[in-house]
Image 1: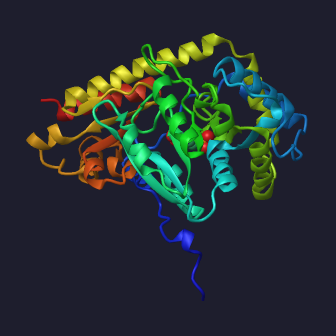
Image 2: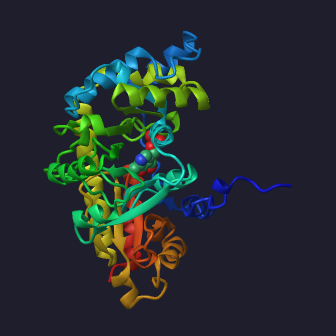
Image 3: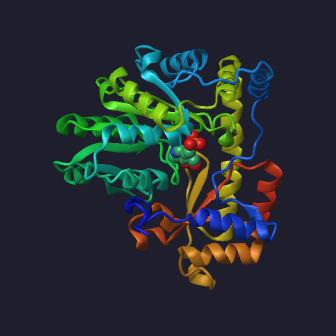
Length: 391
Ligand code: PLP
């Protein structure tokens, strides 16, 4: 038989799933996969059930139902300060992952290049590769994940089409400042590039950090495809609803690609999430406060256990450096060994840092922990880390 397409050659089941299987086999606690197991807000669940009861079960417009796009429009204008012109600029898709896939399909040809900051979210890298384009990484520098913009400038070639910015970032929790985004925009302007942002954690920022959207900067709207979704804000990773905001001529092509691949996002669930328009600021403030407490619990436990921890400024992950543990214990020689040691010695799942780096030497220093967990389970996990490894 003739071989499968080249684009499938590098595709493998990620380590994250393998770790999940190992952890569930011993009934451990999985702080690996970024699955948030907190409840979906009641108003959204009820609204989805009502849509099912009323048989709102047909295909929707490929760009999504109007009430949901209206909600996204007003949220983008008020929360993100993005000058969205109309709902024609908005496409609802199958998660922000679906939105990212249609964005790159709309703008990239095989051989084009995309700049991605490292540590990166693996789906961005693998999706860009899957469409036959090339990923060029630029490091975010430890300890505070700053970016050397001369390196960004140096990474641009004739074939560069886009720069991807994830803010707040997964796995490092970096919240990009207005000044940094302005630097990205300046480079994009100079070389006529697009910016694709992934803002899925936009409501989860800590201390005095502010979420800023590149599309809200002067001149940013025309260059940017803003991607976000509902998975993390409303604890509904399995609903598969996300969206993009971009100038209408880009949105139209992305919508048509959406149509081609799966026609539309699930209609009753779109009605469900449109009820988020009824949630007050209290919902978002409480969510932030809750994650802020969990961040403290997680980071302090990891520090007591002996990790070197760069506290995240946003999102709900911590990237912890294993090297101080390696100095006094065996089983921490590199990230994969450390990940297995944690499962075996205290039943805690994490993710090997090398999944987030092209530079494996740097990646092998880290484990990523996700703290989007019910508090009882998180406290148990943190207690085990402190008791097993604390000196
Ligand atoms: N983008 C980032 C940075 C993520 O961390 C994740 C999930 O972990 C996603 C996107 C996936 O989002 P969605 O469920 O909307 O596809």
